[in-house]
Length: 67
Image: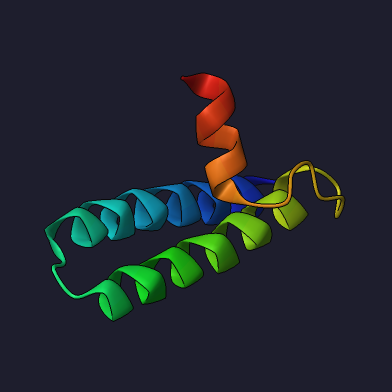
């Protein structure tokens, strides 16, 4: 359990770093790549946290709900 919590914290912090990097990117292809990386990490986080069941399709869906 402790290892899973550590993994989840790492994934969450890495997602936040990538979101910051995406804001700084000017090339649309770079922004798309950052989105893809964030989506992959979001999926990995869902699988580790929610007992291997997806809770949403895309990390951006989660952000729309939070607004």
